[in-house]
Image (cartoon, rainbow, N blue to C red):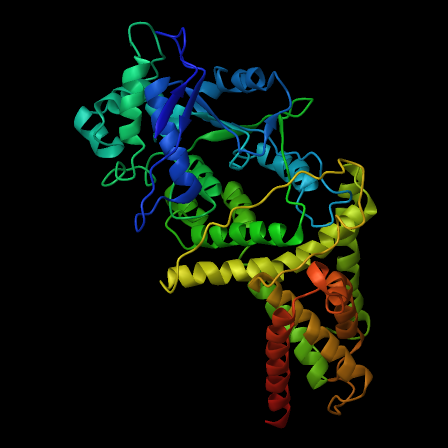
Length: 510
């Protein structure tokens, strides 16, 4: 449904507002946000066919009234016209909780990783706060600009669908011609045609979501679409004016933050096991090797949960069975030194950004929690989809503004709240296993082994560090209400923990 509002006194000009509600039907995939973006692209191509499009999420607002001018300076530059596909503005959040207790404001990441990517092929597409070049979204390659891009009407209809009006607007966009009085846009007729291109069945047997538009196949459509654009050889640019261009809301509750992280991890794993994997983009596309490494850094968000769970499980196994995997004596201090240097470097980045030591610790703690919990659940969700056991679900992230505002910290606002979601089971299980392992060590219930093979100081130090990281979960075991871990979650985690301990004991007997 396309509604043209505020049309009084407007005959040939553009309307003030056009509301779009795309058609969805049961048993027909609508491709979540990527499908919505493609509908918006087609409708806007009929209404204005503007050469540039701005993508902003519903929780973001314009913080700098001159941001469009800043972006156009990049996109309309003589070099940018030939090389730059989109201009990405970093996300910045207002009303966030003090010291970022849930580690989801990503201030340091946007500053350092974003600056590093700007020196390569450009920043990732972040799904919001982004200015796109329409002809790039339509599938244009950089070399098409030099050689010219001529495509037949038959091929246009095969790619973009059977709407004559849309095909005409696509041809004008791909050829680089802008709107002019010679190309008369009748808004009334365009609204009627827009209802056709917004229907659920319009994309059938076309290239939408495959070669043109926002790319389907992952619930992190932003990364997949940006990767496809970079693979073609386009560059992107970061736009960081002062003040920042856009600000929005960050999730302020633990369940919401974990849901968002789980969705991201699921989408990244989907991309890794698809034909859009950065490995193929480098081998068969125009993605430079260093940019390939950058994409692998973000795409392994879901994959990194596997080695981390393996290391944590190995740690618990060694304590229970009185064995070791870390060196002893001076060899242990090599690992300790590396750990100290890494944390000192990350702490310096937080302090240089103006954040506190507590904010640094909250992010370090949450990196352990979300990798093992949300990351692992995201990996399983993507794996089940690949095995065709179940399909992924797009969980909408609820973003509520902090009623206390920036700099004001309510004691309850930053507390860890829990629910019966499965996302809390892995972390609770790991905590219970750490407590069981430490208890076995302190009570002397380990099997007796020789001094060179028995559990040493390194394993106990790592276990103590993990327990400190999971301290909010430890408190949640003894609290009730929304700040306590629900009993069903504790029972599931306890069952898994005792099963793991039983298997460890069997290896000792065997």
